[in-house]
Amino acid sequence: MKIWLDGGLQDIESARVSVFDHGLTVGDGVFETLKAVHGHAFALTRHLDRLTRSARGLGLPDPDQDEVRRACAAVLEANPVPLGRLRITYTGGHGPLGSDRGEHGPTLVVAVGETTRRPDSTAVITVPWTRNERGALTGLKTTSYAENVVALARARERGASEALFANTVGQLCEGTGSNVFVVLDGEIHTPPLASGCLAGITRELAIEWTGATETDLPLDVLERADEVFLTSTLRDVQAVHRVDGRELPGAPGPATAKAMRIFEERSGNDLDP
Figure 1 (cartoon, rainbow, N blue to C red):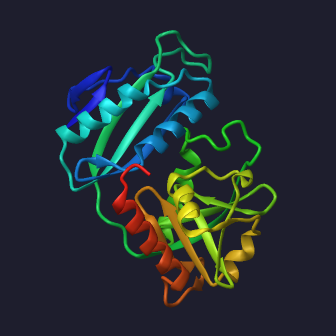
Figure 2 (figure 1 turned 60 degrees about the vertical axis):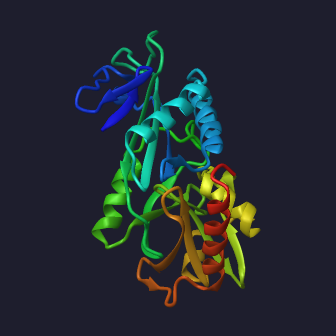
């Protein structure tokens, strides 16, 4: 297996990042996960634009998008997989042990791993911890993912694949690695970016393609929604059949099933929408 590091392809066994890299020591980095289908990255332009926005939000220099494109193409060519998780990681680079950055410049790593298609429906739980809609990292896709690790571990313990957060004012926000949609009286709704959720690429496309409405939603909407579904890079659109102890029989429901069909058709016709 080969990855992209320090400007070129390297064997995974010999590739090395400094133990003083700021991405490791203080989580000073941003990343993107893309779906790769038969050697082609999906929605690469949108992902690169968000990578740049996240980097700017942390005060990192803009990534060289041309280099990242070359890196993605090289990694996918060197590691052919039918369905892959393509990961772009961009960190503050070698630095001191504290929060101050060094002067060595950023680190760019691009790698791919094989994955499988997700089930059509899944179970989720809610967790007592909150997203901070006013935090310094709100809306940025950073490598500071420890909160998500803890929440996802709780979900796994309870037979679920995702954990959903409210924000500090009790509104429904997002999952550890997904955005959440609900269906009320046949209409599709999803929390607005002001809730503190990440501007998911799949979320963005789902809104454009299904006409979903961005709506402030209380967390307890999950107790009465007719349907619930998740969106993310590797889930695409995935129905939810259980929220905590509440079963949603028949998932995917009609609105979710239609959204799944639309997303599959539109994304299949255009790999870089």
